[in-house]
Length: 425
Image 1 (cartoon, rainbow, N blue to C red):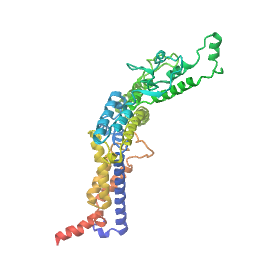
Image 2 (cartoon, rainbow, N blue to C red; image 1 turned 60 degrees about the vertical axis):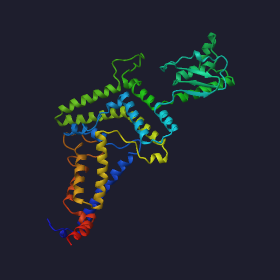
Image 3 (cartoon, rainbow, N blue to C red; image 1 turned 60 degrees about the horizontal axis):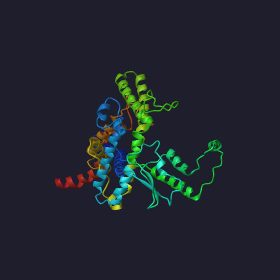
Image 4 (cartoon, rainbow, N blue to C red; image 1 turned 180 degrees about the vertical axis):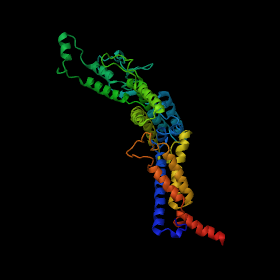
């Protein structure tokens, strides 16, 4: 092996420099992309990668994540507290928010507390006091009324379709005789034409129901996590319509799947057991995505909706900072390490140290999901055994660390020529 750099061919030197610059560009672009997502409603985080760690270091990497299985996201009170924390940080980050912006934020988060729709007058014979909510659990002090002074319908209810139908029928003639009752039950029966006032009333009811059906994010989260029977376990028997105690909800099924996977993981020794584990983990991840996907979508909607409220001057203040946590420190360190090492490798500055640092970072990317026998395969189209892209780049960086490529083409060459030579002189 040649010990003098002059014995290495020019083509080899150029290719090694191109390799260094290529890896540096990949690092830089990846770091800048991840940093750029911090200004969006869905910032990049290493949480998912670490939470899905597998192999002998699984527990160590998963311990770096506060909620690796996402169980806290399935708790309504925990998510509400997280969103309130986001609201506090949002208001603190942008102190110039005016009252209108704050009201719009509250409307986005909590929804409207009451709804109204203009109506010149109630049709004769319509008594809204006779209306009672059916499916929706009415809050204390609920009301649906006609305010004659501003001439509008008012309610603090989120009217459901069944209630809409009941309100629309208040202006339709009630069948009295047996023949009328039978005719009304026939869908082909031609209904009598309503008078103009009744038509305006029905139109106002339809618009009022549409407005009241728009829930705030917190209300939608409540429906999703607390009132959805398929999640909570309050599953109705399709035959009787009653609660079926033998059918657990999706949340309970997910917890059971996690516990079963952890038990099987401890006992797996043979290849067929590992294959079964890989298949089982895939099903766990499918169920997790089904449960957490809608919750994450609401969080993204909150963040994106919040940023849309800002003026250009306010947006220039930067994104809302995340609360201090171990995963936030990991995210920050990862993003800036990628960007800084990428610049150093491309520029050929401290090229050996930069290549060694890049190798260390790649090793940390490799170990959470190593393609080793007995370890479930990482998700994606790539299939590897022992060696994957991260390990290949790891060895490439070690090779670059063993060669002074920065002295061939890079800032190291300029520093050596102008700084160290002047000191020697």
